[in-house]
Amino acid sequence: MRLTGRPDQTATDVLARVLDVARADGYEGYSKHDALNAAWLERLAGGSRIRRLAAIQLVMRSPVDVRPLARVRKARNPKGLSLFARALLARHRMTGSEEDAAAAKDVLDWLVANPAQPDFEGLCWGYPYPWQDVGFFAPRHFPNRVVTSFVGQALLDAYETLGEPRYLDAASQAVRFLLHAPKTLFEDADHRCVSYVPDEKVTWIVMDVSALAGSLAARLGALLDDKDLIHEGGRLVRYVVSKQTDEGAWFYAEPPSASHITHDNYHTGFILDAILGYGLAAGSDEFEAAYRRGIDFYRRRLFEPDGAARFMHDRLYPIDIHGCAQGILTFSLQQRHQGMGGEFARTVMDWTLSNMWDPRSGWFYYQKRRAYRTAIRELRWCQGWMSWALACHLEICGDRS
Image (cartoon, rainbow, N blue to C red):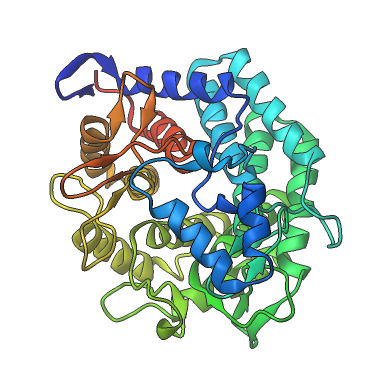
């Protein structure tokens, strides 16, 4: 597929440029919520929840990139590294490039050698900055289940692609953290919900967390022929499925009033991919109806017909690059496993490359507002997500140049 108005560049070309830029930067860059990586802002915020939130939101919402002026430190983001590793591994599977295989191993070996704080069982990762969210505070490098789930998926990709047992061992340790670290927020015989961060004080339920953890646990269980892991994965995913609305959507939090986010784009995609991944690993169609309702809602309410990614079900702007990338991923994965979705994935990709790609800089725009685009260079949010989205789509659907 060629870019509208830019006939000299294909999606394959763009993927190569994105990966080259990331590697040239040593995979160090800015992240969406990293304002407190400015030492003076961290000191100014101190222990105040309100001041932390204010600093993070002001930097995050600025229409221009104030991070260099604010002296925010660049860092390696483990979630971003996992996305780049998955993109490199996918391109290796497509081309046989030993250079890509070596680059992916370098990234993953660094992650295994640099886990988060070692106070929990297993391997785990978090963000390289202090992060105040609405429902909790996570100090710098404090682990969380979302980042750990994404790293675990990249490790299993590496094991299945390269056949190196050390990646299976590392993924097993990551799942140990996901299943055994604090805190279980709800549990009965068939359902389980776990917290975003391993903190006994946390009571806030974020809906995609348990789905991501359950999908990884089931995938590992299938590789190890461990029925207990698949069962535990099923309990986690089943809790999330039980919270699906009649229309096929999920709220970001439980109860829904706990967050201003309602039915947003990329968290919905996370849940759908996790449900699909669990079903494939477990060899189960238990959640097939929920998946079909969910992906129908996702396409109808979270995308425009031309492929633009809506911010939330009732709000188009800002069109966020993460939502664009997630649409490419989710509909491509639907194509791989259900034989449908690929054409719309291609539509989303075409819109994204035509509207969110800057060939002069080699970067994707962060957001598109009604009257302008925000050119903020966030390595994980913009480049990492789009590298994995492009690689996944190219591997599944090919490059129609």
